[in-house]
Picture 1: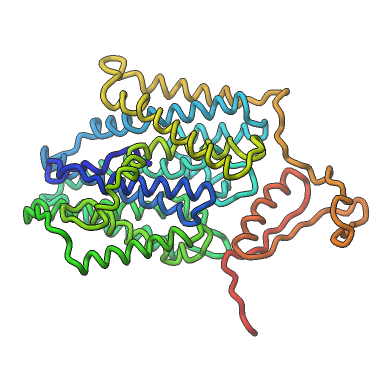
Picture 2: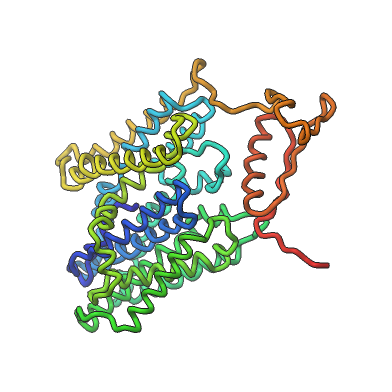
Length: 471
């Protein structure tokens, strides 16, 4: 998702070699996220945490390597590399969403498209969506094509702050890897501890899910592993390539099985997620990243080095960018296709767009297709142009269809069976109360938004994790 290549992260100022297993992990992560968004893998959203761990591992490894070579960190060079790697493909996608707003989107979508497009350009999507009450788990209203940018925003915020921290550490410590590792460990523990402490089952978990402070823990865990591996390589010169022993190989299998169960069963609205579940998954995930990055061989590295997984890892950034807008735009309402056919087309189109993004946009720019004076001004010009496309493309038009939302007043009461219809006297104000568990809570949130536009009263009385007292 982050567009970086952790498979070649350096330690001790030099590359420790290509790690195909890390490419495979990125492939697993993006496949899990896509499968989740298509509705086939309830816990596939945990692939985002795998991306977070990989990002923390890679970026911290790069910073420690630079400190090892030069004793400092070049902020300008670091941020320029990140911009070359991440901005081009992102700008193309946001521009495409702006064109979608200008041509296809219903008028009811335009305000949200403008808000989310500008937030994406500022890498503030997570906070903007949180402030606007955007429910990541809402399945009953048309989602924004840019809803998935919340995670990219968190990563970019990390990319802005973390090199500053590394520079400060390098300037005050003779053993920067150790101090940075301590900061990573303490930061991860604090982030995950705060999330557990703040969780309130009756209020839901959107603040915890979107917040940079409550999601940074996974990234810092990856950073902690990078620090440990850096110290190991520099202090002991550990370059053993012997296979892990049988107990470790078995332990790897146990961790993989546990994470697999979480990806298969752990719903995003399950209270267990914020009662230690996401922290446990983060620790398990970072252990697999450490194994995949190790010089010592294991059965996990063999599996993750499988060529199809590595290929998915290669296109993971573009696939993450494009798959969600494709899912949102190509729905059954617009196409009329059966679900299997629709999902097959969605996957094929997402893969094609990701491949085009890699070959036409990402690789040429990363390899220096834009040079000299043009390279100095290209980012500003591109951002300005995409901003204009988003703003102009989301201007409402009088002839723009308002969408297919059905007003309650237009529904014929007789359309329901006589045995299930309960008619109220004409003019009776409509009041709706939703009760239930986590599913009812999501329905209730959708009902509250609908009530504000349709003119009826609604109350969400559902509890995400109700406590029952026998007395």
